[in-house]
Amino acid sequence: MQKYKTVVIGTGPSGLTSAIYLARANLNPLVIEGLQPGGQLTTTTDIENFPGFPDGIMGPELMDNMRKQAERFGAEFMNGWVDAVDFSQRPFKITVEGSGTIEADSVIISTGASARYLGIPGEQDNIGRGVSTCATCDGFFFRGKKLIVIGGGDSAMEEASFLTRFATEVTVVNRREELRASKIMQDRARENEKVSWALNRKPLEVVAGETGLKGLKVLNNETGQEELIEADGVFVAIGHTPNTTFLQGHVELDGHGYVVVKPGTTETNIPGVFACGDVQDTKYRQAITAAGSGCMAAMDCEKYLEGSVVHDWSESLDR
Image (cartoon, rainbow, N blue to C red):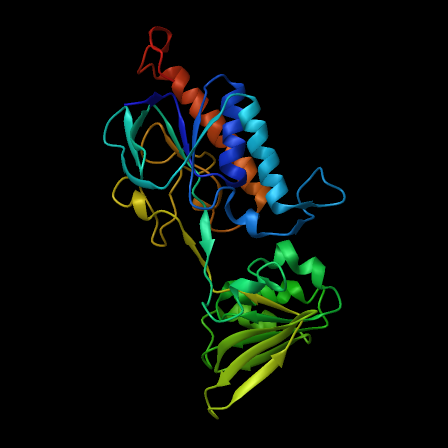
């Protein structure tokens, strides 16, 4: 059974930043990539709000650069899906589909959170081509355009209000007449003259043409008729799901499935297990904040290993 000083589960900005810092500290981390190496940014086209790139950078290119940087300093990568973990005692055990079980003296969890999608025709085909799940990331690209925000919660209201900075009109589409958002968030959106409403309408299809999106086909629940709401962009704002199913019962999670960390740190309730990025971030969910928490996790992990001698690495050929 292979043993490592530290294992990073998941990539993306947080996991890869952790790997860079750990590798530069000569900890030779193993990074386990999931089914989507690089995380959500691999589905993003232009990124213009990540510091250091005045002309912007493509999401896949940024992730590839981070991976190469981690490899340069000695990080090892394994492609696979983590089936199970055992954090009950050190060394911790991690089971990877198709690769067996490995051991680690410390673990950094950076499996991220997946944006929820509607699952309607045209949605996945147009991600990065007019369909987005992040107004902060992509709103700038729709200056002077007509936009749609799908959802009825606080996130949808916040995204709609934010997008009015760029769009000429933002239409909120919700399948019910009532909104789930708090009153203050609803009032803020309703008071914005650029926000219009298409309530009690069920999204059916994202409609695209040769030159871009045409709009969103919906079912009017009152009349039973299908309608086309014209728009240049569609923002899906129905929440995120943290990728923590395999962690249930092994580390403390909140009511929504996010990993709970000690405030101001990346420490979980299990000493030697840390979490960074969107898997523990219910508020910001930005590439730069994920990278910052990845740095924090690596430094917390390094400090933990310095004070917790659980294996004599000088007498072992294992990593």
